[in-house]
Length: 411
Image (cartoon, rainbow, N blue to C red; front, side, top):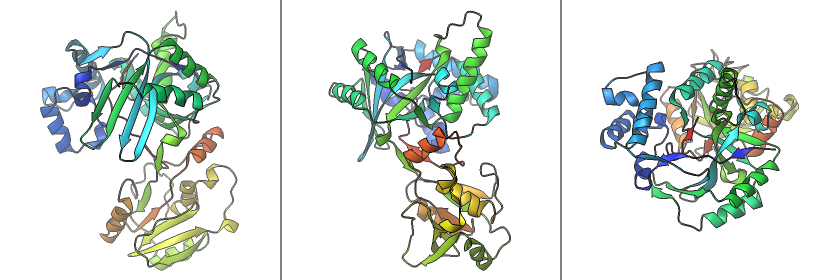
């Protein structure tokens, strides 16, 4: 039984939503970042980059306190308002033919603790501690955890009725993405949604493992400090964006390796032959077309690698994942890369034209070899999470990517 809770969001006034909403901080080039901070005083980037006001790069605890101050300034200056009634917030993102419709809600750290909220990635404890400290200091959560649930007719019916009405926000950003937001605050709609999710055995984290782990850690800390702890305090919940499985897009990360671990091209191909049938391609850019098939670019040539199933054991859901197969058959035993997260010899690429960029990087000599995979599926994510297993790093690049600052959960 999954618990979802409406909350009183802090959010921009209608006339400023376009200006407040920002992409992830890391997605901006230095030039873009400076232009936005200089010419847009309402951008959420001013809150998460408070040092700009003082023309100083600020880190650590000092930055956390200044983030809190900038947030309070946005409230005091009426850039933000606080809703009067608890609500769910229906949020639609559309770019071209891709449209996703999900909703912001508060999810339970107890569900996280009891594995009702399922994970498929490892987290790093010092990052959990750092973000928990950040949340405790700033007192709000502006980055929701993206989670999926099976498509549900009851939920869809509520959503389809709601989107016929005028939204609270409707704007298109400069990257040609349209954003719409509606409030669901009427008791009947809230109750129907909660009952629908009570019937679910699990929710699956798609993106935000460190955010959810940090919220769980903070809840444990505050519970221990609070002798009157009741379980209803805001810190017992964290903000999530829940979306039906049919409305997420999953893309692959390519892998590029700087050298062949001392092997010549010919020696490397001979080693590959143990696990793969190797097909040299002459038809230009080559992408894999099915599971357990890999595209490789090496020495100005594309190859297709077909897994020899007689030489590879499928023992569980993880062993069937293409990123794990590549790791266990090539990256670790042949190329000597055991730490996929920290080894400087391997780089990951994603996005439009990524195969072209991979080829160009190898042709320039920046990398010796590149590998392309088919995307991981939702069913694979769920199977690995259900089994309590962990995917290799960079197994999925997931959309939608949400704008920050449109709905904020106060702790």
